[in-house]
Length: 154
Image (cartoon, rainbow, N blue to C red; front, top):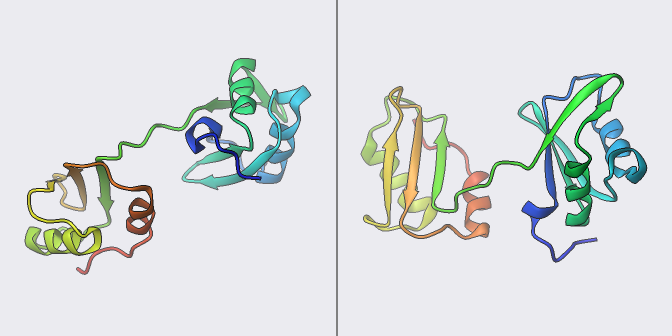
């Protein structure tokens, strides 16, 4: 069931849950309104040391946060709202530090259909990460497209 409420309002993040607390156990716990304050979940996805919970209703996510402390198998779970995404900034990772800035610019312009002046690039000191600052917010569809594109050529 897809809710009209925004994904951000319906999402929570469990920080670094231990391996013995798997996705199924988290799903059952956070769907249990009596124990967690939650409700029906749309998805549970473990990624990058965190687990992202998406509830069917924003009210369930709010109840989970208002409950305060959560624990499962005698392990305290740290639950918070995921950090907000800035629609004018993207982080491009995994760049070969030897790749020329001109090649990266061409890649960004081609993949994102941008012109010079519609973005600014800020490379990291190591050259393997790049912040792309856009002059206009990126559309959700383009953000997902760009997120799933392979790394630029080396």
